[in-house]
Image (cartoon, rainbow, N blue to C red; front, side, top):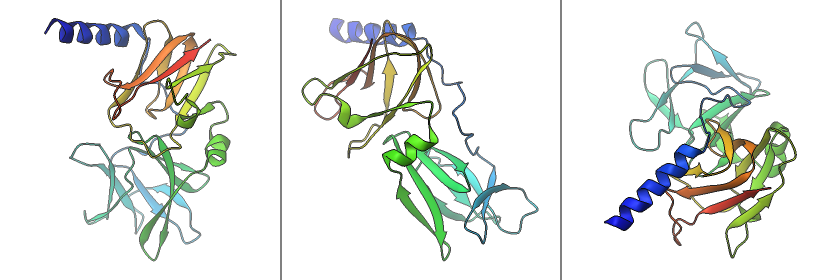
Length: 215
């Protein structure tokens, strides 16, 4: 029992000592619950309003995961993106999953939603202010990675290029300072230190932690 309490106190201390908030704005505005989008004949996605003849209304799933679902004007379920954050970029509907740290692009073919995972180059072109950090960049023996902080606001985007799943993972630190974003993999690091990305502090085969050493 003492060990459990000590672990909880330590984890809470680490969480509170990290100057972190999810109120920071992501580079692209999330399509909020209740907002409407439509797919044009030219193959572009646009935000719309009730006056449009055809539109898809975003809702958040009632189950675990908070996945985005889209409904017809009559309230009929049409599709889910399987993502937790969506935005429109150059007419494309882009989704991000906080659970697998990946980006996806969506389009329609004969009324059926199609999905494609974005590549490193595509993500890098959208987030030029962020250093893209791949999960595969971490040491296979220590699950750690050293990064050099070369500016006051050192922005990184942790991107999953593996088949791992990161449900309930989060960032903590006892010496680094950073701001979080609604897109889970994004961090704005303002003070050097060690940042832990873990599943409630676990470090197991099923849920290993990942350590970022910012120098």
